[in-house]
Length: 411
Image 1 (cartoon, rainbow, N blue to C red):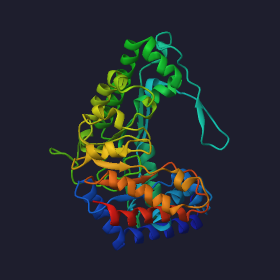
Image 2 (image 1 turned 90 degrees about the vertical axis):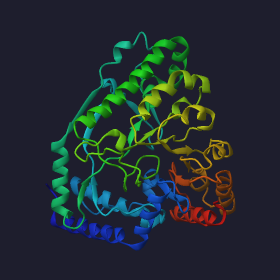
Image 3 (image 1 turned 135 degrees about the horizontal axis):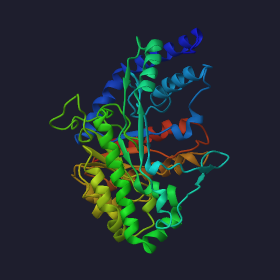
Image 4 (image 1 turned 30 degrees about the vertical axis):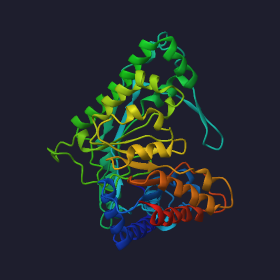
């Protein structure tokens, strides 16, 4: 371990700051509200602003110099930024999280990507041009984990700040994105053409990808690598896992099951196909994966309204993403008085493009959502903001306005 005494002092001071924030009455109240919200008893819409895409606006220069210390410093500062800078509904943890060192590689395939100079856009060097002729590429998927690496990190953090912030193993939501792997392997155009050129083989490939996801989850369960995510754990798409509805009946702490956990699925890459083709190639394989989860959040940027007939059949659906491309009124009618949360992703361009923040237009946009979602449990997750021209204060103001409009117009 190469953490110096000076770095140790910096890290311990940050840990004390995080602990203090976690004990605040505001933080405790937010935690209470999240449990009610995810259990469908919410008192108001919850709102978060995901800052990792525009971290350059928020993260101050790191003071530590060694790689190990800088990693810890970044994690500690990041754990407090939303509470301090954005003041959204993110709850500050009363512990430091470490995840298992796990590697899962679909078809044992490494797909290279070319990344744009600014680091945002990229292009896959997709190896598949024809799924029949290139079938040898689809090898057996590989899975590995290192308890030694994980325990080494836990020991390092514990020795440095563990007497202030306890160190806990933490797992996010189980994450399944089969269509992304298709795009990664073959690109959008080839994927579209393979559905027509080789429909049987394409359907078999989708099923195989989903089978491998299920096998991966089963391996994690068998090896004791699953971790509960029903508390202050990010479960993808800007939301958190607080719920009393997990773990499920029959829970054994010594053997955590996938059915005790939140899972997430999305299918952004299939947005260009018809509902019928989604049903033909993806609906049933996706459903087989979601049957593994205790609770499901579904969707990212893709509109879900046009394939709702399939999404609504996925078991344990608790949150569905309502992106800017989704028909809000259609989904509001379907989710009214249901057991599924209307998880709105507001238009990121309203804060991430212009220097001046048009608050009147923004308020109108939020009111439109609240009107469409009347009778629903509502959540706002601001995502995909890559810059904040005019200043980082826009993020805090965006959340303030959501809260103000929710008080006036949420029903």
